[in-house]
Image (cartoon, rainbow, N blue to C red; front, side, top):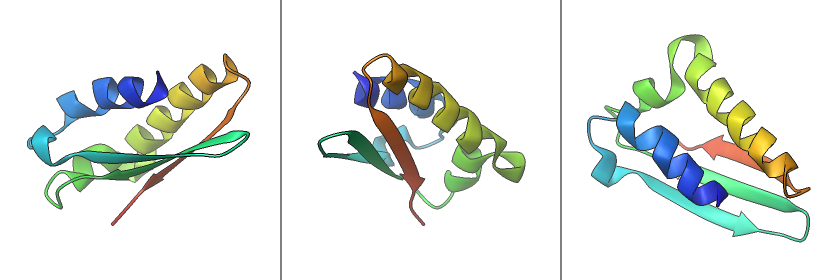
Length: 77
């Protein structure tokens, strides 16, 4: 559910959505998402002063609250 939500939120922001990779690590209480995009799209993903990335984290963390799981999102270089 959260993985699909991330793809749905991120793909429209990118010029090259086919290069988007989101790896999901599932532990007992935490969902960890490692996001990788093309170098030219990284700025769109992060946003000015990190605002887009913060908004993505906030939305997905709220969705994770519905399943009583902690969510960690890391955008890789």
